[in-house]
Amino acid sequence: MAVKLVTDSTSYIPKELVEKYDISVVSLNVILNGKSYKEVELNNEEFYKEMDVSEDIPTSSQPGIDDLVKAFKEKVSKGHDVVGIFLSSRMSGTFSSSHLVKEMVLEDYPNAKIEIIDSMTNCMQMGFEVLQAARIASEGREIGEVVSAALKVRENSRFLFVPETLKYLKKGGRIGGASALLGTILQIRPILTVENGETTVFDKVRTKKKAVEVIVNKVLSDIQNRELGGIIIHHINCEDEGKELAKRISEKLDVPVRVQYIGPIIGLHVGPGSIGVAYYTKK
Image (cartoon, rainbow, N blue to C red):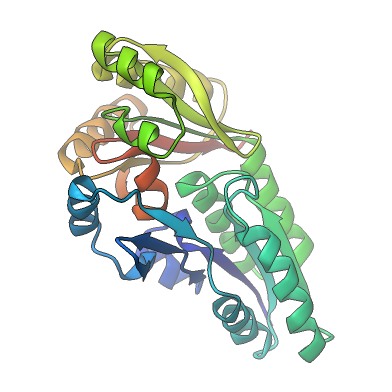
């Protein structure tokens, strides 16, 4: 049998690739106005519109244990080995819960091989770990090689993004009120990234246009002496901006660059209008 991948909904892997590699995606949950929704069942545009007018701050919760157990058992019951790759353990309890689920599944399937990986990130920076592992698995490789492929991407990837406003970072307690006010007055835009499993500031510039310029230059610098493994543009309710950035990078790199939505779990922290790039190199 083969090695199969399980991940969570914050990887935002394009649907056709999820289907191509038979990847199981377990949904995190969003709580808005007292109601809980599975992220995968939400309409992104409608969610962000409701979030914008709601007085409540949306929150998120990890997948239910039953959902994780179901995803793992679906694979191992067919004789497959499983590699689970999940949202950074410093952002969610999903990774921790997956270890508990692993032990539960092994009680029923003691001969199953299951490996759990902390992606140390989110969005398609994590998604690329999953996809590269799935590609290696599709070649009939052993579980150790699949794990190594994911870890190699983790070590050679980056995610850079810029919010449209500091409003949502302030709402979620990610930035102080005074800092948010000062940033708004001076049009300061933090370019955010993920390091050591946590969101942090990569740079600060005066405008969103300048921020995008810095991001593009960093992408080109990173891949100058390395082979590009994969790249994708992420956006939150600003698809036209995403397409424009994708076209710009595509022309510079002479490779196709696709555009992918960021869903509510990650999006509620940075808000509509956010745009960024996730990519990895092979060296």
